[in-house]
Image (cartoon, rainbow, N blue to C red; front, side):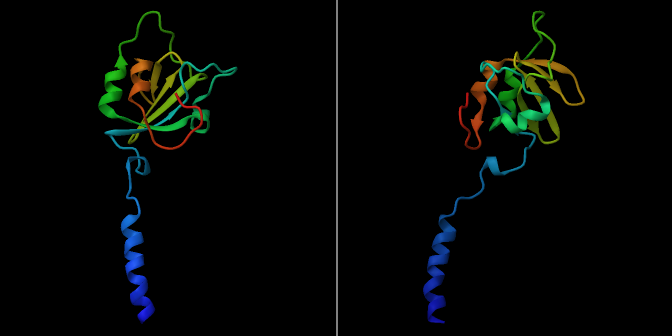
Length: 134
């Protein structure tokens, strides 16, 4: 019984000092998106396919309002979305968006649009460790 009384304060102290959940440990929501990102300007011999971005992209998060500010109208000189040269995957709840190297984006099951790559990259918040980011 005395050992139990001696251990109880230690257990309480350890429990109190443990970090709580942060945004990166939560599932994607409508207001914070989970992002897998490979830098737009980084040269690659081959592009990344949609199914590869989860493996090669680094984990980030982006606020919905910051993402919406990065969305802009398609410029006439912008090529259409290329699913073989993906640089970001963004998930807001059940909505998934892929962004290619030039900022052309495709909402899964929806339309194509354009994302300002500089604004998008500036809005990213690291959600884990990753070598060679941005």
